[in-house]
Image (cartoon, rainbow, N blue to C red):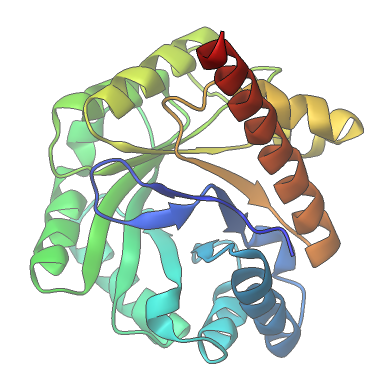
Length: 259
């Protein structure tokens, strides 16, 4: 059975699949059904990076999935919208409680906008919890090109998550070329890079292969393609497109080297 390939997530020390399982689309499933779906994605297809959020409503499904597979075999990412230290502390306690885990592999400041400096109190809490072992990797998600650039000189931010797609949609500040440039700089600075909204939140579903292959051209500085998944058939199709792209790339490189 074809599985997702694995990559290093920047210099974070985490090894993750190239495809992340965005869990927002399974929030209406029963926890047991959603948990089985996640566990099968990890064990059968190698998609063991599960991306969730308090607002997504998928913590119950992820929590159930964690009961069905060894904790160390899964990379779990959740997020806080907090700006203040107090809110960050409260959010973390809620996340740990709802997921039924005593640590997160990745915890992100979520939807950071305008200036990353404003979120410093919340970031300090995440860094403290990393020192305590309850967070393995600290990250940040944003739809702002300027925020990605701000993070280049913030060593505490190890992973950056941002939207990128062929239409340039879902970027709240800046444009597609600006986001490409910022992500490239981030990766060169050692940050792990995860992109979202690859399908423009459904706008590009009519050309699934074309939309995915467009973002794959930036594979030299993008680690993970985080795609919202609803079922294993959809996941299998995404893996097939991505693996086929890299197989073709390897063949071309081999032929070039042979010449």
